[in-house]
Image (tube, rainbow, N blue to C red; front, side):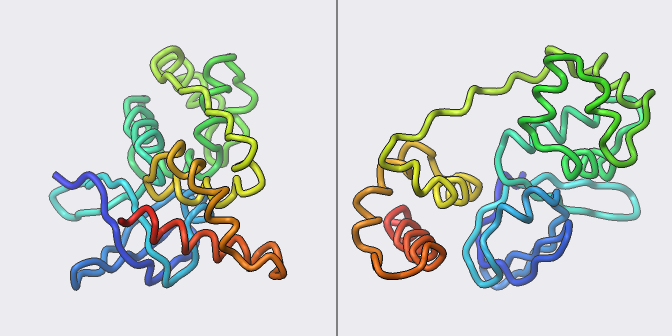
Amino acid sequence: MFNSIYGKITAKSGERICLETGGLEWDLAVSTHTAEALPPVGSQARLFVWLWHREDMLRLFGFSGEEERGVFLALQKVEGVGPRAALRILSGITVAELGAALQTADLSRLEKISGIGKKTAQKMLLALQGQIVFDTPSVPAASAAPWADVVTALVNMGYDRRRCEELMPALAEKTDAAASRTERENQLFRLALLELAT
């Protein structure tokens, strides 16, 4: 079965991403957080996927990382939560915020998610509290910290965080110091993709 798709982003809007790879264009449903984390149209990206199969339809869902996909699948164990509702939940709260809310039994935070009432929030706590383990985020190396947004974008594409952080100092020296912050980040992102692809 599919694990992930890597290709060029051809469309990006709201909770929908299109990726072209090998002559095929894939239409994926994604959370708004995943869509926002991805680079612009025309860039290369990797999305982890899950296929929803019913008698009358097929739908491919995309995720920024395996952790988000795991939470998406876990959410469907909650009574009354299907794939569409699980995606809506992930659009209304980040994976890290959801983990914190579950660990601290913060019912009020769960109720603030669009479309989630008190009963569903209670069911989420009962079904998922203690079931989802979140890794503590690694602290980026000091030399990589100024380029944290670039590192995050690369990690969301499936690259190893430590490897990306190690690359930042040397690659940053190759960017145009006179360019704006945004331009340097774009240059650094492209250089990192070339380096990671080798």
